[in-house]
Length: 289
Image (cartoon, rainbow, N blue to C red; front, side):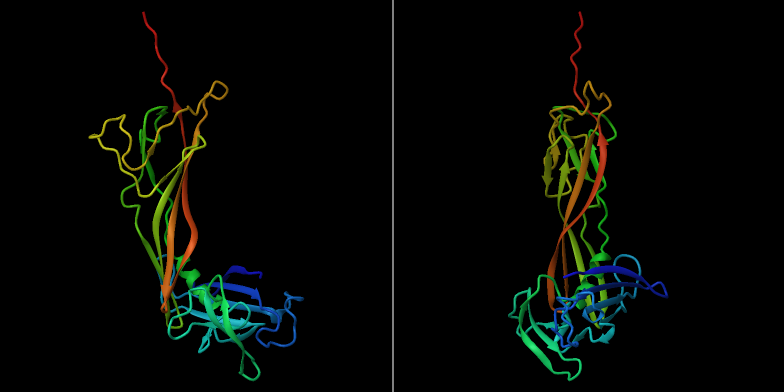
């Protein structure tokens, strides 16, 4: 399926997000168009628009969703469930026995109002009418780029065979939350920093499952970090490039989940990153006498 995500400009500084996708062939009884053969036919398009009730990060209330099939306004949610990208509705069983990715699929004839094609279907992601609210909550999360520090300082020259302590600034390693609401449903998104991957710039990487330990004067300058650090074994400079530097890239992986309406799931693959250039040199012996 083809999916288009775009921001729409609307009055009163409200935010809107729309998802449009071709509906499955004749799945919902909308005419006799074969959407597999003519996916660009207007009657094959399911459009879901979220109009937010707040600006900025953190959350907002009073949102609303508008759903259309072939330009005709339909219910985003009804007794059958949430509108899906194929124009059918997807709901859950009352006992909560269905796994997270299995939904009860019901297609509704727009002329007669009769339900058709009832059955259990697998969805890799939530139905689009629900997904828009989830996406809005996730978009409102404030997941800042990592503010990094080191000893020796990143602004100073590093040296081979001297342990480097790495950490993120105190107060940065925190859980972030945000919400989005529509039609009486509130979705809460939650982002928890999981790990930091430090790409040293020399072809190696180090994974730290925590913010790292800030260096203090109580630790010996040559002592390794107890939680997150590295020891370079080669310099970033060379005779061919005496001003060469390593690019230190720091990538934070977040565990992002959402919950609301008795449902919950995860949103994989969300990261934030910071890069900086450092110089790593080696001590040279000085012979006197």
